[in-house]
Amino acid sequence: MSFHNPVTRGSLEQQLQELPAFRALLRATEARFYADLPLIQPVLDLGCGDGHFASVAFPAGLEVGLDPWWGPLQEARTRGIYRQLTHASGAAMPFAVASFATVVSNSVLEHIPEVDPVLHEVARVLQPGGNFYFCVPGPNFRRFLSVARMLDALRLKRLAEAYRRLFDRISRHYTYDGPEDWKRRLEAAGLVLERWWEYFSPRATAALEWGHPLGLPCVLVKALTGRWLLAPTRWNLSLTAALLRRFDQEPLPAEGAYLFFIARKPEAGVL
Image (tube, rainbow, N blue to C red; front, side):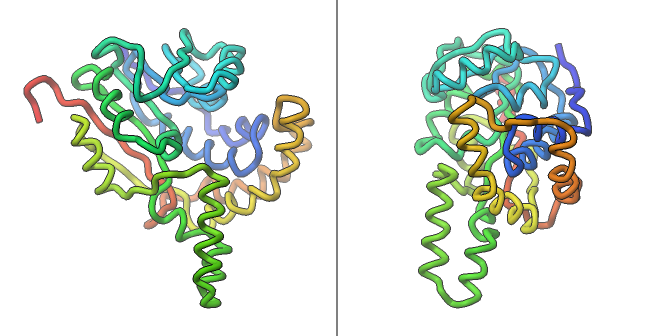
């Protein structure tokens, strides 16, 4: 069975109700991409986390969510968006060969130090002809960081690189591969890269970057209450939504900090 995802164009407002602003902006952009892609069931959400993204991007629900972290899975369970939740590593999925027609993995693979075994597992559990949708930060992410660019302009190269490494640690990013590198990785796993595009302009990336320090109070709120926002009301979020909407609605840039990929597992005997 296939269906088109009915995610609404008000995704930014939905994301802001539960996430810090910088994450809400990125996730709202990505949710709209999935709205234009067919999802053939059954679907695996690889690295589902707490299920918040899926609850907005896939409101009709998904068959299986998988994540290696127990705490987020328990939160995902409360959302009721998955028919099954599985606590396991992406490099050792407890599923039979060809279990899924579609695999999605939203901003997950960049956080995995050894990503190639995960791609091989994706190829194993995908049905022939099945689609693999995923997105990751690309090489431009580090280049677009505004503080690092300012330091580069002042010829403070070492400080600029130190700032980029700091942001890598904060973001827990291990991989900034470009399209050719991902094409090579996918082909080695038995998958074919069908299409890709860049998103998140330098200005949008700067908004995400500065949102990290500005969002520090949300970290404290999360630690104390278990949620990111104390008052996720329309009046409380309207100014933030207005400030971010110009980035949320920007067209795809010529160069973007993030990459979205559509890959496919070939039919048997077809390369």
